[in-house]
Every structure is written in C-alpha cells, then in structure tokens.
Image (cartoon, rainbow, N blue to C red; front, side, top):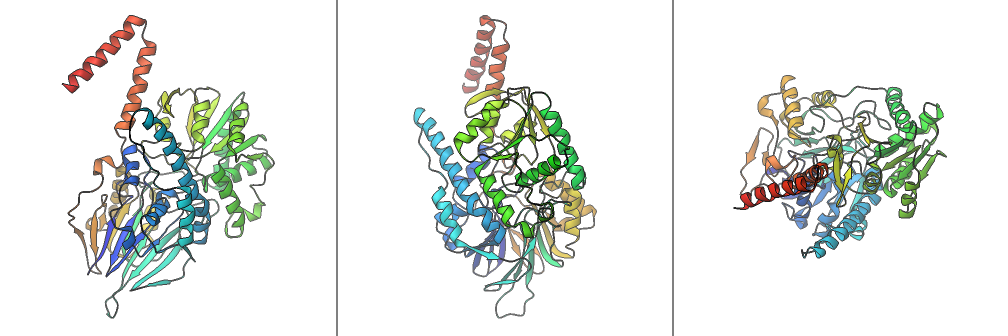
Length: 533
C-alpha cells in the first residue's frame, strides 16, 4: 500500500484542475475541473476519467471556477457517491454556476447536432445536463476556514483563505497510517492564489512546514504593477472615457464570478466621484446577476463593500436576464457599457455582442482577464483582423484593449513570496496550473531563491508520483497520457483551419478580378492534390 498523487489535469496547461490521491485504500480528488481552450484540450472533457468515479471516496474543492469544479456533475453522473467538501461561499456560487454550465453544454450540443445532421455526421450528447448539475449540489458539505476536519482512515484536512474569489481556499492535508507511529505526510494544494490589493478579500494565507506543496503558476512568468485600488480605478476610468467618447460603445467580456462584481463596484465608485459620466451599464449574464446577488448576501464577510454601501445597487445598472432583454441592447448605438460572459469569449452572450459589434470602429472591446490559448479572447488579443463566430466570418475593426489590473491571480513575485512563506518544504514543490513558459519561469525563480533543483518539479498530464515522508518517486505508468505534452497548451488544427479559411477569403476579396480569384483557387487545389498524392 502506498500514498500516491496523479496529476489528472492542470499539468502543462492552466485548466482542468484535478489531482487524484490514493492513501492506503482511500481514494479522493482535489478538484474536478473542466478543460478549456482549444478543441483538442476541451475534447478531454468527453473522455473517460483516468480513474473509476465509483471508487472515489470524496472530493476536496478549492473554489468555484469551472476549470476547478466543472466536471463534478459528470463525476456524479458516472457513479461517484461521496461528499464534495467546500466552503459555504463556493457551494453558494456553484448552486447556479454548475447548472449554468450544464445549460450551456445542452445549448451548444443542440447547435452542434443541428450542423452534424446537416453534414450526415453522428450526433453527440452533452457532458451533463442542467438537471444533472442541480442534482450534484445535494452532495456538497460545507467546511469552515482554518478548522481541521477528520475524514477517517488517517486523512485530515484544513482549508485556508486563498484570497482569489468568494469562498476560495488552499487545502492542507495530513495523511497518516492508522495504528502506527509514522510521521504524517503534510501536503498543501494552493488552489488559485490571489494577488495583493485584491478587492473584497484579504491576502492569501496558509501553513508552514510542509512535506509537499502543489502550487499554481498561472502568472509565473508575468509581473504586474502593484496598483492600489484608487490607481486601478483611475486606469479603468481612462479606458471608459476614451471608449465612450463620441459615438463609442464599450464591450467587456468578464467572468461572471468576482471579475464582474469588481467591475461593477469600481464603476459605481467612479460614477459617484464623477470620474466618468453616468452611463447605462448592461450586465448581460443571468449567472453574473445571480453571482452579484450572492456577493451582496456575503457582504459582511467581504472587504470594500459594506463600508461603501451596496455598490451593486446603482440606478445606472441594468440587469438583463431574458434573451429578449439581451437582444434589445442592440438598439443602443453609442454611450453604453456592456458586460457579458464568458470572460474568454468562448461561450455565452458575449459572443452575440462581439458578432454584432466587432466590425464597428466605434466599439472598444476590453479584456480584463486571462485568455487561454485557442479561445476567441486570445485570438482577438493577438491582433487578428477577422475571426469566426458561430460559423460566420467577422471583420475586426473594433479597438481591442487589455487592462491587466483585475486579475484574480498572484503574479510571479507574489507567487514566489507565497511559496517562500510556506517554508520549510521538506520534499518537493510541484508546479501546476500554468502554461509551459510560466511553469519554467517560476521553477527558475524558486531555484534561484534557494530551493533545491531536484525538489521543484513540473509534472506532465497523467504523471504519477509516490509520496513518502522521506522522498518522492515518479511512478511508471502502463498507460499513455491522454494528451501529449506539446498539445496541452497550444493552438490546434481547428484554430489553424479557422485562420486559413479567413486568410483565403481575404485573399479572394482583395484579388483584382475574376481571373485573379480563379488563379488563387487553382493554386490551392494543386497544393491540396499534391498533399493527398
């Protein structure tokens, strides 16, 4: 019997957080998240789990973001019968976030199956439905911060405030062998670590003197200005005033939870200070509306809200719940701010707004969060002049801007400081939840700060390690990883095909005459025939 950890997600990539722990007959997970990004990466969501769901005893959940929680309904649907342990804030958020995820999947599959039938292709089923997600909430059990919970068979757990979003936690584990005097193995899973000067939350906390630390590295290669709240709002005001000048419209793709509430709070304060003119602000996301109400209910436990009154109750804020209300936003040609999900532009109502307004030079699109490779948000930030949305080619004439002052993640300096504050770490630090460049950069930083090179490890997807109180050993596996390392955090052929289609159309449109267009098509046909031959 051994204690092992298998990295079933967020290894070599940012999303799909899932760690499988086996400890002397006990099987449990830290997180069970959905993969996001390229179609190749998202395809893993439809695959079988690398473990038997019915064999899992319980799940420990760091926080509510879908890349950490989004496959819990699938886990339950496939036979998991245990408890999901999470903070009250996390459970409250997921009571509507998971059903919304199920609804999005049902909607997208309906659209996909319509196209598949037209093409004579097989139809597919959603990963789980809205009803599956609603049912999954009944298996949640609330835990409090900084209180030990004994889960039996030598497993104890304690949750620490991670300073990331409402309810977010780092999770401390103490694993011991029953009926022995062996020293327990102590692990800490960072979850997602929040930055300094984070709105609503204190700085992240955690224990010291560990055997193993599993740490996120989302921004392991990036530094941000450490802006105070007033400075952050000043930057936002500059963007808003510039975007709304003349006949302008500002469109903000925003994650429904935390990022949207931060924006609303800052916009409300800026209007109150007359730093920006009073304008209609549409919050066009049913999930974000519910999240905002949840934040109001938790106001007593959040910083920056109660002392400023209810910043979300602003007469200029219009919460659009129905599809018809969302469509009516199209009637506004100028002078409005539209906040809609999703934050990476991969789903939800934001895609309709972008489809409607990207071609308009009076539109400004403001990105305020991380954009995974292959998502529409990352493609827009890369400067592409045309994109494909819902099967249509859309010219990009809008101003695409980025404001990286609302991140919920610690930057490289803050991550390094957080890790060093956990010392001593006796065995190993595993770096996860990052793209290859970020992982390698944080590894180099930690080694430069004095950690042993042999003890700062970057696992790949499906890597497995044996954990002991004296050493860490990588285990050989009879199974190949579900996805090659090089494919985990890069654009795939779907992205290349979409871009090629756009490039071909642009070349044809710019061709001088019919003869030139036919020449281009003949060259393409010859290239294709040569490849096939």
